Image (tube, rainbow, N blue to C red; front, side, top):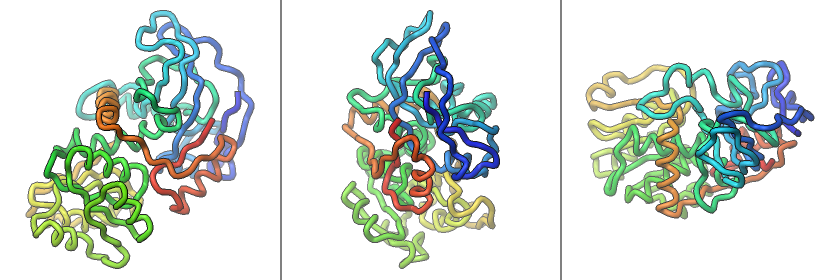
Length: 336
């Protein structure tokens, strides 16, 4: 089978197309999946760029979706021909936070991922895909979709009448916009690009802020909400944007800290955090149970992912270059 391997030292130039042995038939409790697609996340870039250490020869990519080709003895959850989608934490079944073992078993990171044609894995490494979705669509859910879902509906209490602020137009932010609007929430969207802001408006964003033109966008969000503040901020920037997110949030509100695009360390306005009684909660994707809830949610509301670009497997390095150039809107998919 064809696969992409990351050779040492990790870099985009060391993503190598390899011809590897077919994994064979599934054993007891396993399924064999013919992968149709993967999708790019910042976590995947961090692996291939060497920011997250990975073994020499690692097959990258946490997201994968495809068709079940064979099932092993004792498999009851799937049958041949089913479309399935991978889990970011295969060993996190349910609960409020990932168990420690799950954190050390992430595909494309600590174990081989889905930048390949075929995989044989235990059946609990996958869930069903949304009915009628293609592999390319389903592959967008594993990391970005589930992160947005958990931020709004597991850690947060987004509901009709809530106000949510999303940052930028990457995969998590676009999913958060779609999910929040489906729940009846008001959405304030920020971006440095007027063209992308208009695309966010077309997806349902109620208010737009160009943060290059309005650096104090937290105060602007307060103005837009009549001085109350937003209920939830989907915070993808990290240290560089956290203070503005806290300014934007209402007293007792929720900042879902999911990314570090604007910095991993920095000073925090602890007085603001305390005086507003804010809940700033870090989160890393979600559990199997949460993924199944999300899938039911997108089916019930007719939500489909926004995919801006497709790259073939052998051009994975160029897909990452497109990602870091911030030239995409929504998700970038790798067709396998």
